[in-house]
Every structure is written in structure tokens, then in C-alpha cells.
Length: 419
Ligand SMILES: *Cc1c(COP(=O)(O)O)cnc(C)c1O
Image 1 (cartoon, rainbow, N blue to C red):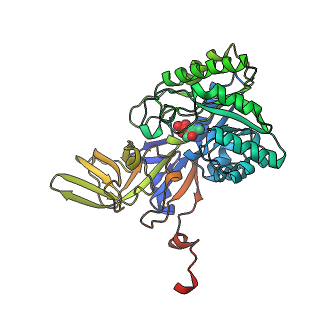
Image 2 (cartoon, protein in one colour):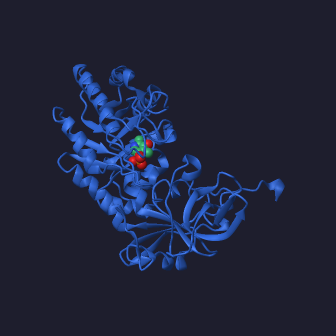
Image 3 (cartoon, protein in one colour):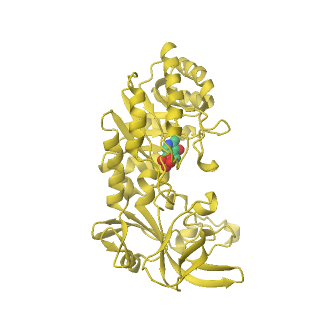
């Protein structure tokens, strides 16, 4: 569900015509719907209502500070994977006690920052990291609250680049080694064991992998109990898919209905859920303008002003985003590749799309671009990053200004001898 709909052939973001926003903010442009964000967050809240829970929004999906503030004001916590994300989460007003910190490569500085901020817990991904956290915590004279991220070796049946819970994955601790790692953690003077964490991948469109992974984790919890290690918090990670192309993914309620009954005989005092994509994904679109049309003997191209530097998912994962005209028309349907201006053959937004013929200067909307869109953007080809707009009802707000050329060399220092 989202609030980007046509009214009289015009695409609207909530109650504002997309074309009107573009007049003010230009293209390429990310547009987000306030109401859609809230609806998705509330779906999680309602689904897990019966259990003491914290919803930790995964910042890597979308870390615009205005979006984070909106989520913070509505009770969201944060799942962060870097010091930068921790900074943004705290600054947006997300309470430290609702922040969990994952990632395979935390530095000493990042660990110290998180300890001083008093986050809820670290989701630890290796024995070396446990030692590092223990060492930094000892130096600061505090105890570090941790969960171990275990890798349950479950195939989430998604793109290999976004599968994280298989044996060959760099993430987490293999579940068969977990008990030993917990025993090791227990011996460390400045480590406080709080929980178990798992996150098996992203854009998962079936419930089964979540259930299979959880069952394995619960067997581990039993084993830990028997070894005198009490687990208080269960962090089930994120990964729920969204509808990019008739995927019909489960919703948060399907997820809670499948997993909460499994927890009956356990006395966890908190369940943590870490959704990213399923909150932000279809709460945003990327609007782009057709610059040129090009006919090759075997292909027709629409060259648009948004490229892989603005939205890399099609290039990186070959992922599908629906692409629709901002103003509907009844021209003949043609088969086209919608490509960006970047000097790379891999720079495309959509291939072999059957759409009504596009004219130069017309606007197209790349749907479901609210997650892993702007956050993965770059300035490749020295293209300033796009602006971001948040729509609320009949009002819209620029929540990130478009970068300018002068942003491209902002941090450059010219050596004296080259001046
Ligand atoms: C990326 C990530 C998430 C969010 O995944 P989504 O598929 O966007 O829900 C949650 N937890 C961890 C540890 C992650 O790395």
C-alpha cells in the first residue's frame, strides 16, 4: 500500500501532483509520502502489539534526517551499521535505548561512540569483534550489552547480494559455533550478554525462511539456557520484501502470526524487529525527465536524467522497478530500455519495458525507490546528488537540497605545489 496514485491521468504524491513538485524542485528527484511511512510503521506496531517489542528501522534503507525524525516521533528505534548511522539516528531523536548496532567491521572508535551513547545492544558478528568491544568497554569502565548475530544457514530465496544467512556469507557467527562463542563472551569481564540476533537477508517474499531460521535460533536459545546463559532479547532482524513487480510479499502481521506463537514457551522480555525496505521502499519514488529518444536497429532507448548514481539497484542487483509516466497518455505501446546518462553500459533503470511512447521532456516515475535509493547514491560521473522531498497531505517540503557543482570538490585540498 502506498499513496502515489493517479487522479485524472496525473500521478499524485498524496494530494500533490508530482509535476507540481518537480516545477519547484527539479529532476532527478526523490519524493516520499509521509502517510505511507506512517502506515508501514504502524503495521509493524499493530502486528507485534501483543509482545513487548522495539521496531528498529534499518537506517541503511533511508537515512534522511527528516524521515528519521518522522519515524522517531512515532516511536521507532534504529538498526545502525556504522558510526555515521548512529550519529544520524541520535540526532534525529531516536532514543539510544532503542538502537541496535550490527555490521561486520566496527572500528574501536565506532564501538566507543556507541558505548558512550549507551545504545541498547551491539549485534556482534565475530570473536575478534567481541574482544574489541570488551577491550574498549574496559577502557571506558563500562559493560557492553551484546547479542551475537548468528547465521542460521537458511536460504532466504532472494538475490545472492542480499542474502546474508547462508553458510558462505560473511555475516554473523555460524550457528553451530554459536554456543562456543557465547561461552567465550561470558568469560569476558566487560561484556553483558543480552540477546540473540539473526538477519538472513532482504526482499524475502515468503514466510517460510523466517520461520525456519527462527526455529534454529530457538534451539540455540534452549542450549544456551541449559548452559546457564540467559537470553533476554530476541532480535529477529528485518528482510520482509515489498511489491516491486507482483511479488505479493507477506505483511508484518503475517510475520508476527508466524513467529510469535513459537515464542510462547520462552520468556524473552523483548523482541526486536529491524525492518528497512518494508517501511521505506514503496514510500518513495524517483522522478526523472526524458532527455532524448534514440532508435537503434534492434533497440529503442529513452535516455533520462537519472542514472545509476541516483538509483543503483537495477545495475547492482538487476532489480525491477516499475516505471510509469507522470502524466498518462494513450500513445502506442513500445518496447524500450530506459537508461541513464552515465558512461557505463550497466547504467539502466529498466530494460525491455512496454510503455506508452515517451516524448522528450516528459516525466517518468520510478516506483518503490524509497529504500536503498538515495542512501546508495553517489556522485559518479561527477553528478551532484538529487534533491529529496517529503509530501504530507497537500503540502510538500524539500528535505534535502539538490547538490551543486561546488559540493563536488568541497573537501578537496590542493597541495601547495599545484596551486
Ligand atoms: C539491512 C539490514 C536490515 C534491514 O533489511 P530490510 O531488508 O531492508 O528490511 C536489518 N538488519 C540488518 C542487520 C541489516 O543489515
